[in-house]
Image (cartoon, rainbow, N blue to C red):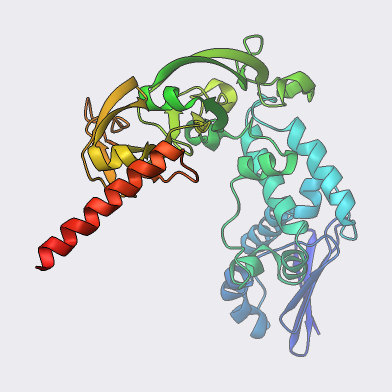
Length: 393
């Protein structure tokens, strides 16, 4: 066994297992067969220390005095980065204890609350320590191999989460997230259902609607006073307050059930007073008892007598523009569709272009006839038979 004295630190080893022992009551480190375990988890890079001093150790040569001091200083510097010490918890601390320690330290050391020099670096160190110790797999690797073990692991721990993002997710809020201040998402979009009559949808209409939404709080100017850790329930916890607003809405001609209108910047306000989201108005059209709609065409069924079907006629037909005359030609067949040009629905956002009104002709056959009517019909039938017989001759 050989022993080397390095100030307050002695280095001893036996056989193949170098063993580091510190006479300090606070730092005590052992290395055996390449595995690092610490009573206070003093993580250090074995490659950086052993590559420099291992040849001298194996040759049983004394280390230079200044090298011993440098080695001791390296151990002390690494000890300052101990995650357990940063959070002020023991190595056997439970998850709840680690979480509680992080909650307290993160609030006290948040740069928006604490303006002391170097507090941001401290805040980042606290976040890094919590991210490792709150994860069972990362914590296990750290306990065995220190911080350098995390860099070489395969659990994705080489890069740490943005400390402000970690803070936001932990406290379930966005304020204090410096990265989010410049890249925060827009406020939430809102949906409002608007019911229109048949004619309102065809020709368009102006409506005043009242929307309940989250606006930026004028009292706190869209921000929350983090230093007091107090959120007002009426402000939704993110610098916004619920208010009702009346909005004038112009519905264009030609909308139909399911149409969506977007009103820019009339949704919920963005957190911290940023740009609001949009308001989407979803249209529902009430049916008309007489007229039906098929895209831009309007459908109507017209009933005429068999006499009018034979002789032809002009009938009054209801349209969205009011009553209009429809000329039915003589000899029209049952089920014939007649078109009334430009009496349909305006094409949405197409100026004055309109569809047609399509009128389906239904011929009514009477179930009973008066004696006079029957006599006339029989005469007509006999005349028809005579004409057919003459035609055969």
